[in-house]
Image (cartoon, rainbow, N blue to C red; front, side, top):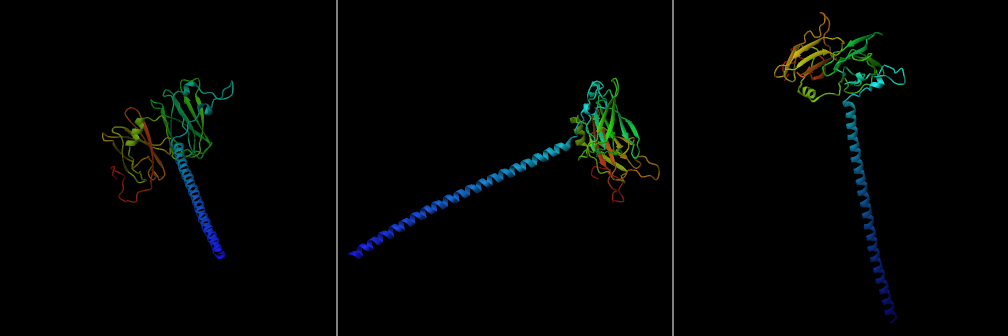
Length: 313
């Protein structure tokens, strides 16, 4: 009898122990699943944060690239009052005659600017005072002004350094000539050609229609293509008063010229050289003028080469 009771009690203890172990395993499993779920959620959260951060970084990079492109696409503009060379005798600051402000736009000049253009009142005149290379002298250059007030000056021969100053005079219809002192800006990419921001759709149309093949040091006959029946002027950028060649596009927009002795030089002297720049000034019948520049390339390796004579060459 005692043995039976003892065995029964032992059986109950074993059963209770087994049940307790099963409940512990279930609790442990639930705890383990909860931990795994929490870790999974944390990983997803980290992935989302990382993805958002990468997207934001990429967006910032794109914005930065856009800002950089915007910064280099157009030149800055001088503030007339800040660069006026006429001091106000009755107070602080400088004087700018109201007449000088009409239609005035003076873009920045940069260290690497080869061709510079701006806009003034078409009824006025403009003169630049430029340093003569390798001397302490200056030379004054009077520029032609179009019916729209545009002017252009080649600066390839001028040694420009940041913080140097060029003096400009605007004249006509004022008590005295208006002087502007223009500080040279540090070099910036694609500022070899500086144009007024007043470009019109007509000027963009000229540029989009114009094809200028490579111009080599040994080019004799040069071909180009632009809008039909426009005027094409080719001039040196590396000289204040360099030679110019007048060409005219035909009804198909083709133009060509003999550059075998351009610019004119004495016998035995070198003509166009690698690294020099030519300015193409293209003007339509309504007076819209587009400016394009091309750099002279090394001589062609082809011994038979004489220059591009068709668009396909």
